Length: 250
Image 1 (tube, rainbow, N blue to C red):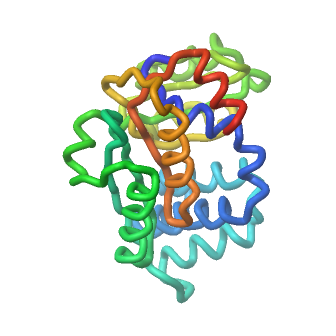
Image 2: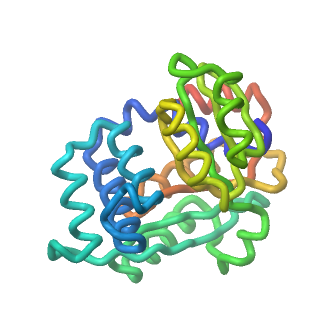
Image 3: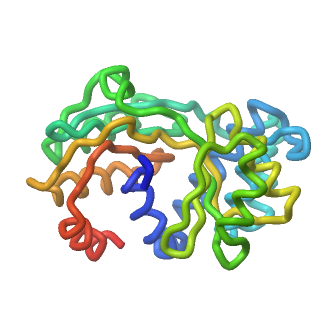
């Protein structure tokens, strides 16, 4: 998958179940609030906010929730203030990064630390694990809306570096600095994205078979924490073992 996060792929496949939980709306609202706080409340002038709103609408988030999240970010509505934090750890030789949006750093740190301890991982300084990842824009398009060739025609000139088709989805990878330009190019071409965000992709992977289920239990637990926005890990699990895990977590 050209370095794509296998956890992100599995998480996307189980997204239909996640969407039924109110927690996903909370997570999306935090992202909208952060984007509005950092770049203003006008999505036409704030590409990050526009992307966050599009992601929320793709999950059928009500417009009232979106409006409240924008107002919270711009200060037009009283509410909590969110901070972006990155935590890191290892499970065996596998590096794990946890991105969080929190209004209470002490609480979130304690929850992440507990997760690593509970599943026999080790929490470390962020820099110790971050060196195994790079930030990339990942945009996913349903092939029923546009096939790989059509998407490629639009995104390559806008700065995308890779386009792949798998399981009925076209995945576009971009340098971080070109992410919003590529999203805008797809919007202008009237090609809707199923999701668009910046992810931590592994620069190298660790072959993992022994206790692969334990690793997935840890990652899944971390991903389900209320303050978690994303989890990345640089594992590479054999196809037969991956199939078993997809049955458990798919």
